[in-house]
Length: 118
Image (cartoon, rainbow, N blue to C red; front, top):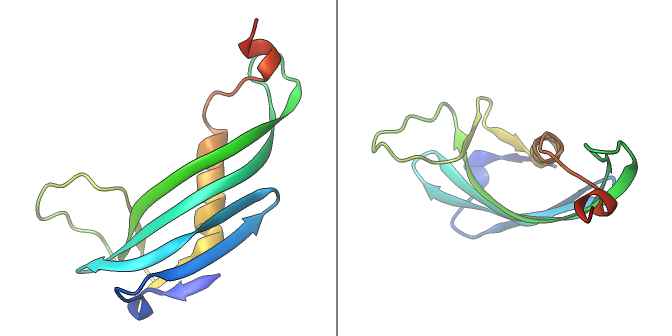
């Protein structure tokens, strides 16, 4: 799902995309200047290999995500520390954002229930 950032207004734009067993559902809403606020929820499960025993397991995902998307290069004038994704072509690809969030989750340390309990 690709959306032109200039078309996003104060009225929240709902979206829902699915990748494998993960659902990414939320809203896009104009915030200020060139910033669009993305609020969403990641839910579902992800096939992972345990980082301790290397056995495959189904990792449950249930996370809330909130960050800004900048229409162009983000310049921080007020020294605020914000999570910002920059869109250099004026378009946001929600499926690409989802894939990026999944890779971020995968990069963390995960263990199966058997290893957690031992």
